[in-house]
Length: 518
Image (cartoon, rainbow, N blue to C red):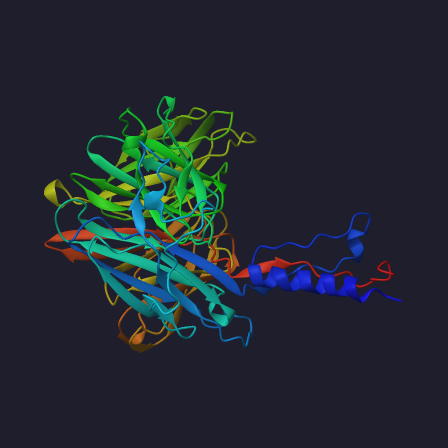
């Protein structure tokens, strides 16, 4: 007699994997690999996104756009929901007295007292795949947003937060693709210089408090500090930490490492400069021997590369600029040496020289790949009309990637094939207020970057989303540049487009379950 409880356990585990998007099912020890079915990829049925508090300026205006691609659900009939809700609060973390928990709004167990009422109206509520939903916020008091999508709205769900600050401290166009919660983040290209004001924003989506550590690394190694340890992020809330308060040392190039001791958070760095304005710096892709930083604008007037080697070995890197016609080694910027646990920077000046491109960092010696993280600080304009944006190293598009909040004008899509040639399909969704989706196919030669004005929906009203799907060839990296002219200044922001992780690999159960006898 077969054990029904054992059969139910396996079925339940497979279902759990499909729901969570990250659960795994392992074959029992001693089993033959040949007897196991090939793992299937199924759409996720639940996913989370976190948008940091948009800014510190009373002059700020923030637009939110949420979107799920059509057909991403794999035929799921579960309607589901997708909402972005205001967090309980967003406070500046104190670094001189972390023991005072009264301002955290939590009890001794670390649970939030100021839970959001279930009747709170979502800032954004997505009703159907294929059509963006929008919302907005104004002023400095806007909190972080916590979002959950379920059912057929979960696979490929994305959200964009775009803030415009016309003047004053931190002016600029600040864009960020809202992030998934995690436990480990690397941010090269931050700074503790006197001209900079960089905040780490931490958002906790869960019902219990998270505890995070922030480590800083400058050109000479670790910037020692005790006040970056054990930062409590209350349940359902956000905190921000001014990184210059974590150390007495001023450094132009700093790598920020955020980890959690308990729980998980969303993390991003909001960087502001006296001369060049402000934007969001998102986390670099996981450390790797070769990294790609896509989407340097053609008219960039200053590009600075910042890299960090988190392991025990130094990294010797060769620089490759992937342009319209092929890969070249930038004259005078052929190599970069990165010492272990030390942040290295290199001023690449106007490296693109009027032609959009992407930067690839490769090991100088074959067979000796030292994992690194990296980011670019990109400036456009001159004098008092300068604007800044950041491009972190990013993973390939994979099966599919989407970026929201595109307008009728001002978007540029950069597609990079660092290895073999590739073909991709780019789909412009319906508009948030109306319009018909359109698609276009692009071929990208090996070792090149193709920068295009993306397709626009027919009869567009409102904003729309762009979805990139590789059709053939090698890996593709992508980024979207959004530009808005304000008071004669071309403000801009760049969002990279890694795989949307809309599906999860679910190992199939063994065909022969005769071993599960009573």
